[in-house]
Amino acid sequence: MLNGPRQVAIGSHDMNKPERFDKDDTASAMREVGRAARAAAAELALAPAATKNAALRAAAETLRARAPDILAANAQDVAAAKAAGRPDSFVDRLLLNDKRIEGIASSLEEIAALADPVGTELAQWERPNGLKISRVRVPIGVIGIIYESRPNVTADAGALALKAGNAAILRGGSESHHSSTAIHACLVAGLRAAELPETAVQLVQTTSREAVGEMLRGLDGNIDVIVPRGGRSLVERVQNEARVPVFAHLEGICHTYVDRGADLDIAVPIVVNAKMRRTGVCGATETLLVDKGAHEDYLTPLVKALLDAGCEVRGDAAAQAVDARVKAARDDDYGKEFLEPIIAVKMVDGVDEAIAHIAAHGSQHTDAIITECNGTAERFIQRVDSAIVLVNASTQFADGGEFGMGAEIGIATGKLHARGPVGVEQLTSFKYVVRGTGQTRPG
View 1 (cartoon, rainbow, N blue to C red):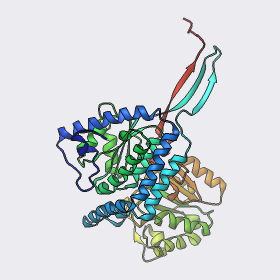
View 2 (tube, helix red, strand yellow):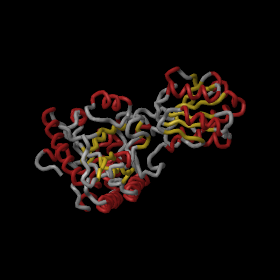
View 3 (cartoon, one colour):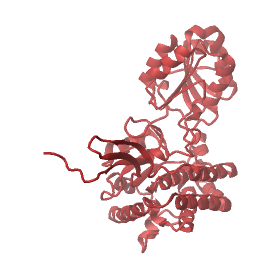
View 4 (cartoon, rainbow, N blue to C red):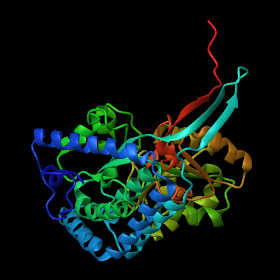
């Protein structure tokens, strides 16, 4: 950990008092964090897979052993969130319990079990002059992750960065401060047990917004990429102010389109799950589109199933005609990330109108079609320009763990380098290795 008084400012495990500092103190302390991360990254880049995996498994064991302490820390965060009048969906994102802690620990073990991407040869070829060229995966270096209320991101982000040979600088939201600090302590224990630098995963303890600004400025060139995970205001600030590359994670304005060729027995449970399994996750469906060609047979049971599940439905005239409980949708309900048990419903004239609606109102995150017509499904897949497109499955599968990645830092909605779940492979870059036998280039 950092030495001297700055350790309390940035790396403290005091779960009761997040420190605040003036601008100069924060800038100086954050620069120390950046330098420590760069030094740790150089060591991690050479660390054997077995050593990194040992750190992750030790962290998982520590998480389980310290579960009571983590729950106690989380209870402070949850109580503060409720006292502040935060909505239930926010509290759900923040809440930890025994099952969720076990899920975090299991995720660390799943990441440890993944193949190590570092050193993987992606391609190789030989030139006519005898030069042998290969493209090889390497760590990016130092990853800065800025996130809000989800304490599990502390473990997921730190573990994924470590597995890919990167150092991580984590800046969680003040709402999850106690929980994130307790989880981070377990990661540090794992690093210590594996004899890796404890500064390989650092948690910024100050709640000062200036700390975020320092990260966005790159900490004197010591941050290689920033990953934001949170609401629109956070992501927009990162995109507007960052002087280093950003893996963009925008709002999850996800759609499910029920085509006239859908099987209703499949469509109803998918739609209810896509909206109601966890309403506060970015993969929750926010708008349901239903083909007019299926009006008589499909709209009524879909809407009633959502209402009966406790979901508020805001719909167009057709949806309102189905059930008196349906509220009139405003224009801005289409294209809104509710993150609550609320859904917007609209009738569309076939798959092309559904595709046009998604293009106009979506966030290129995750969109689904339910249909038994392969041709319609392929048209949807080819023309919906989202990071994740599903056929006959819930949008709640938009998750790195469900993709077999162990976990994710977020769902990248940009189109460069990383798109979709940002897992271990997405946290690597590559370099070209050229082997010769004395070749020189002719003039």
